[in-house]
Each structure stands twice: as structure tokens, then as C-alpha cells.
Length: 231
Image 1 (cartoon, rainbow, N blue to C red):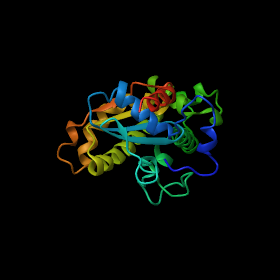
Image 2: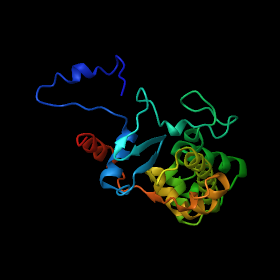
Image 3: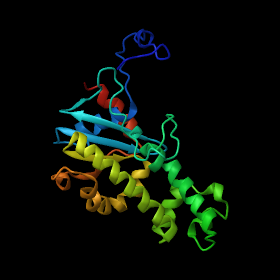
Image 4: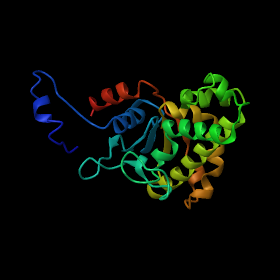
């Protein structure tokens, strides 16, 4: 991994008696999944953590793929819609800008405002305050059978499916693992995503690639740090 002056690895190494390793959190979590989690037994693992952003990591034979400078596998910034919303990275239509938790909440708030859906359980859960509608609120409303929340999550699942189809065509991983808080919401849509993947993928074997929930949830970062110490 290439370091900038803002992260002086040489100074970190001055901590006497300790070996210091620094890496991207999503890449490290991917390694943990490949070593001990849902990716055990697979040679090519594609991992994505879905939260307030979307981070990704690729593991080849239990080793993180970094690219030339350490900047590879920024899959969350693959453009899905070049006319889409501006991403925090500066580009438009990145999958992160279209399907992260922040966007799920924003999409739900916008639809509530547009439709005036006073019947929606989302408003009940947020005590009538649109600003209190978060991704978790959308998930809870979905579990209660709310149709607006269901539509928002179905759209998110469809966008993620298009993205994963691109990833399969490019990488052909042996397994796809989804982690992070948003993946808790998406688990109910895994069947829909598997069914629709062939529409967005030219790989004739895409239906054979398992789409699984990652083993490590909120402990992914800690597991990733432990995994770095093993390599």
C-alpha cells in the first residue's frame, strides 16, 4: 500500500516492540472473510461492505489484491448511471451514491414528500418527522409490510444487481459476499438479486456464483485487523 505524508508509516514503526500493518478496512475485512468467514474454501473472493458508503475488496488465494499502488478494487466508485447523483468522490452515478444507506434514507424521504403518503409506516416510525427517516427506519417499515419502504429497497437491490453483474463479467469471482449494515436490509432480496443477475451479466455461469451474507458484521474491522496480522 502506498503511503502519503498524512499517514507516516515510518513513524508508526517507531513503536518499540510492535510490527505495524496498515490497510484499507474493506480489503482487510475481505481477507478475514476469506481466511475464517463465509469465503473459506474459495480462491477468488469478492467482498463488499454496504453501509454509509460501499467499500470492496478482492482476495486471490488468501491474498489481498492491491494493484500497483494499493488503490485497486475501489468497486464502490464504479459508475452505474453517468447522469446520476454526485458521489462524495466527485464523480456521478457511482454505485455508492445510488445504493448506500444514506441514499436509501434520502430516496425514502423524497418519495414520502412527493406522494404525501400519510399512511406509510415510515412516518409512524419517524414520529412524522422526515428528518428522522434513516436506512434502519426503512428496513423496519419493510419488515412491517410497508409498500413504500419495499419499493425503495427493491430499487436498491436492482441497482446492486446491475453492479454485481458488471463485477462478475470483469472478475468472475468464485463467491460474492455482502457485509455491512445495509446488507442486513438486502438479505431479504438476495433471491430477487440472484434471479435477475443473468439479465445484467453475459457470463453464462453467473447463476452458479454464490451470493452470500458475510460472516462478520459489526466485527468486520476487528476481524480484518486480525487477518492483517496473519499475513
